[in-house]
Length: 92
Image 1: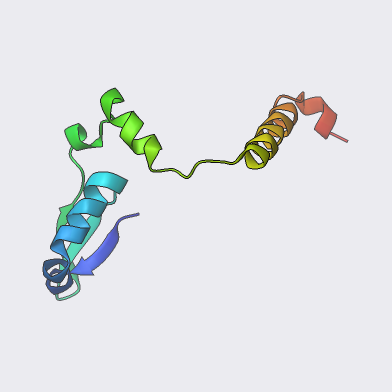
Image 2 (image 1 turned 30 degrees about the vertical axis):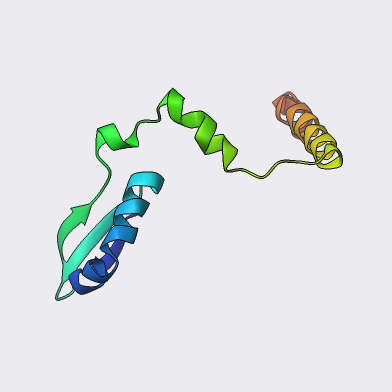
C-alpha cells in the first residue's frame, strides 16, 4: 500500500523520497487538502536490477566471521530440511 504525504511534506523531503522510490520501490501518494492528487512511483526501467550492480550491492552487507558463517550454514541446512519435509509428516 502506498504511503500518503501532503505536498508540502514532499517538497521538504523531495530528494530523500526520490531515493526511497528509486532504491526501495516505494510508492508515495501526494495529497493536497487531504485528497490524493499525484503519485511518485518507480518506472519499469528504474525497477530493474542490473547484474553489474550486484557486486556493489552485496559489498554493503557486513561480513560474517567464521563462527557466524558456520551457524548461518547450519541454520540454512535446518530450514532446508524443514521446508523439504513432505506435508503428510505435519498432518498429525
